[in-house]
Image (cartoon, rainbow, N blue to C red; front, side):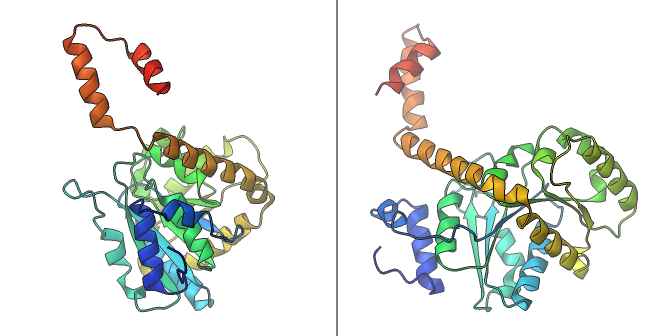
Length: 296
């Protein structure tokens, strides 16, 4: 993979595909990259139907109008038939395809339960090395397990809608804890003000910190509130909380990459076959089995 011109969209796309598929030499090539550590990564998360894709579309347009280069990683649900991305989010952002300052890539979750592709970290670093000014990661919207976005993004935006109602109480112990900015999208709908008030009450119950997450009302389909959201993102990126988290974020990424590297030879189907044989033998101890396999 030597000599890849990451400023060429086609070569960039091919490089990402090779890394996704663990092509020979891809790991060694990643080690040669010099990603810009200070390139901000913005995570957009929230339940299905909250309007995340439309909101991302608005943010991309805002940044492009400012003369910035933007990359979007849209983490889509995996097709149950070919393990590929369903491409829903990328279709909704089709208006940006011809813009040379925008790069959009769909990633399949491939069975990942946290809303992120297992390759998201590597691909994010490729995009940093390609010279983008902003990187936006939109997650698949699978609920509380999406908290792993906090281990990748510098700023995490949680998108909710007024219809969420009492559901925010159920989110309190999970995804609510990792949001740096709250967005109430479709704020022109009935009950929006009451929903924002209830959300504010929950936030005030959180322990005091150097950053109090703002609540921003948007109507993404009308491009309302996008500029306010972009300004809030910049405020958070420039806050002391973001700067102090950088070492933690890098440690989290390193941990996930090391874990993936050590687990790459583990085949779940093979494990199941071995366990089945043990069960047929009439004796099986899970902890003894794990200890034996950890020594391999």
